[in-house]
Length: 156
Image (cartoon, rainbow, N blue to C red; front, side, top):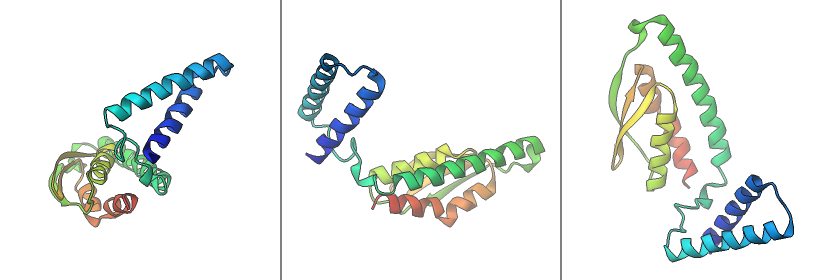
C-alpha cells in the first residue's frame, strides 16, 4: 500500500509539473488518469520496492551529492590525462568484490561506477563486478571501497 501511495504522489507531482494548468476540469482529468495508471500497475503487480524504492529516501540525496562531486573530479582527471597524451593512460580490467546484498544495491553500484568518467562496469556476477578503467588509480580507488561502502549504507 505504501508503494502505491508513493507512486500516486510521484505521478501527481510529475503530472502537475508538466501540466501547468490548474483548472478544476484539468485537475479532475489528471486525477482520473493517475488513478487509471495505478489500477493498471496494481493489476500487473509491478508496484513494489523496486519500482518505488522508498526505503532509499533517507540517504539518497547525500549519496547523489557525493556522486556528483566524484563525477566532476573524474571528468577533470580524464581531461587532464587526455591532454597529457596516451602515455599517461593505463587501461585496466579488474574484478572487484562488492558488499551489496540486494539486486538494487548492486545495480546502483554498477551504474555509479559507469557514471564516473574513466570507468565502466562491464559485468556483474554474484558478489563481483568486472570494471574497465582508463587509469590504474581509478581501479585502486574502487578497491579502497569508498563507493562500495556508501552504496551499502544507502541500501540499509
